[in-house]
Length: 383
Image (tube, rainbow, N blue to C red):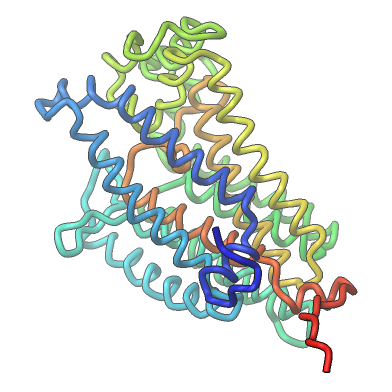
């Protein structure tokens, strides 16, 4: 245990970190490992791999993800901005490269291989995009003559264009929705709300018209016709599990769904551990989002407010989309459940995002001064 008199970086970090956030993130990582052992053996055996191939790799991904999250949490806001700018520039270059040298899967190019590692640049782009937009919004509010809002719009257009080119419409909607919420936090006028809302509806209609696979998924969702095997099985697994589940290892959905260890791990959790486990998982995500938004609401620094609000928003929206697909409430979309679904790029990228949240919500002296609190002074010995 660290003493409050200890002024080392680790001790200072321990006494200033938001431990509720830290506990929630560690809980999700732990659940990811447990559910990987429950969901992945059947998938591995079906494709001729060792039973615990994916579970072992989930642990391998989680260890560096935890290290990255803790390392980022030591940074201050200026270092967060610098890191995000570098990461944004690098990921934009990789987003362009993936269109030419990326690995094509089911008609989409989203992955690029570097030094034998497969990387999905869009996952790492999201936290950097949120931080840079937060900085631009904050700079415009601090000095209205700085066209921060305009630059944030141009950055959105650039990112959305690269995502649509892959195409990755799920990430496009997630990124655009998060940007809109951040813009609203920054004082978006009502006229802009109407304009952006109309643009969003137009974008969905355009995607339905231009991309056949989008039209097919929406039509299948609305009519229930066509190949709806995965989503039907995911929903049936949750129904079959009931309140308390059929027991660890006794589920059937993981034996037939190809993505039971990734996109449909929530269904596996519901079937084997019951709706109680599903509600527990949902409550952790809800706690993170609500605590993040509440912290952002109380924050005096505009940049920190927008950044924390944006990071927990994209985190929460991604979780909601994944769980709604499992519940057959929205059209099928390949999107991971943060920290729980299998995936290396997703794990590391989300760890960076939540490391930023931990860093920006640390209790710092300058924040205490802004809130009107006096800094505690160490008692001087009597002369």
